[in-house]
Length: 351
Image (cartoon, rainbow, N blue to C red; front, side, top):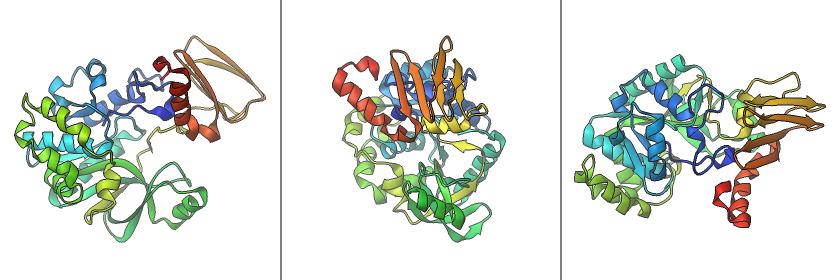
């Protein structure tokens, strides 16, 4: 899944160049490229499909020359993860009606790749033999308020348990209760299932989406697919797979894992993962001098020097024609900054 705009990472992530196409850590590869490289170690490149917005077709092709153009599924509009997954599942059905599928965001960071790939192999084996919807849950190591949580049933089959409940992002007190109970995992947003299982779930729980895609079964993986998708996709409801299916289905299981995962959703998460000095300041790409300053994240172009004095807990980020200085604790307001920028300046070049 590679169609988002990553507005919480503004100004680095822009509508024209979202975060999945960026190289945050100076590795020489974008998050999308790293994700594809990771999965190529467990399955052939021709089995990888990228679902993205139409405007990112050329960008995707330039970053992934090993991926055939036919493997890039283009959404005419953003409609959240449920329509995205329905599109991909129907295309895969036309190619292989018995396929087992792993669904992954394109912008996650995985530090322990060998452990991750072992987890994926185990999960794919499980969904091949069981009529279940499987999500990967991450063992929490702190009372994180930025992630959703999954509560486990008591019985386990190895690392896999039936899901008891899903919980949206909790407050700090509730997150601490979840951590101490040892009954909850972070919801990674990575899923596995057989193509027949997920399409049956759409038929049962999201018929308003399923009926639109079912009407064009003969068009998938043919030259008529694009016109069909352009016609039906904008009419699909804007709904997540979590809310539309996983929180309602009776056959949802979770695989417990620990492979150094981060969804890289915010500047704060990037600060947590970056090398820091003795005062907990992190610097990306540029040079920086700190005077009586701590707990800051600085991200500017490589040819810039930043000097900070008496600053505590700030994000200082410059990209292109935008400089943003924001308290780390208020980073959830960045999406509002983007909206206000568009409304008050009318300049789309800023977003």
